[in-house]
Image (cartoon, rainbow, N blue to C red; front, side, top):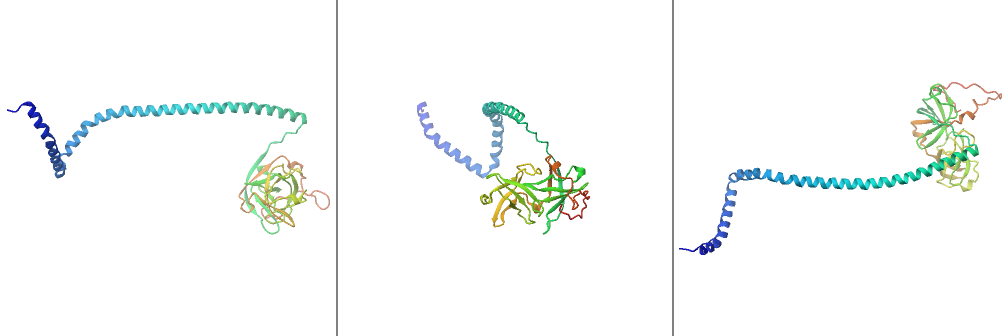
Amino acid sequence: MRTPAQLRATWQRTAPTLLVVLAAAIVLVGKADQAIFEPLRISLTDAAAPALDALSRPLAAAAAAIERLRGIAAVYEENLRLAEENRKLLQWQQVALKLFAENQAMRGMLKVVPESGVSYVTARLIGNSGGGYMRTAMVNAGAEQGAARGQAAIAEGGLIGRLTEIGSRAARVLLITDLNSRIPVVIPASRISAVLAGDNSDRPHLVFASEPKAIRIGDRVVTSGEGGVFPPGLPVGVVAAIDPDGAHVEPYAELSQLDYVLLVDYGLAGGLPLSAPAGSGQKRPAKPLQPDDKRTR
């Protein structure tokens, strides 16, 4: 009769071997017929699913809580940043109000005439006489839409010309490249004043420049405001070439691809004469604008 100690020692020696043999047998049986163990695996999975789901809920809640804490921290930092920006903006507001008050006081002391309101009409190009003898364009806005002689015509980029003939529903724009166009301009970088003269080419040139030798390629050209037709500062173009005839300006606006233009009333057209003087010294009445009219002014 074996003692309990002997039986324990025998089991300890044989148990690993038996477990290995049992595992090998299970593997062989599983390989031989997977259908035997598939129900068992499904049953185990079904049994463990509720426990796994119960364990996952606290983890998901903890992850959501951590994400909310991060959001609160981000909102707090954003609030601090906005508060600092608001403080700076309040300081600038005080500075702006002070400067505004000083400006108003100085304008009152100098008796500055306030600028009139600017109004504009959007019009579409319906005709272009871009030939060798004239450079004008016709737009589908006239007196009925508020267009008036002398108003500036502006396209994307800058000034393209001014209205010279007004009909009830159409108007003609004298482009800055036309031979009859003369616009007082200035070069802001050097304060050189000149007249932009069209010559029916794609690039009008500068004449009567105050310092022609100081003009450089790349200089910006804007209206000077002299003559009272255009306000100062309207962008016109850039000096693109210089030859013995003078400096040639490339317009900012692409005059060959005009589609829509703005007819802008700066309140300065009232200084123009109502019509061009006739040869007898008397003013002739304005002729109604017709679609086939080929006059340039």
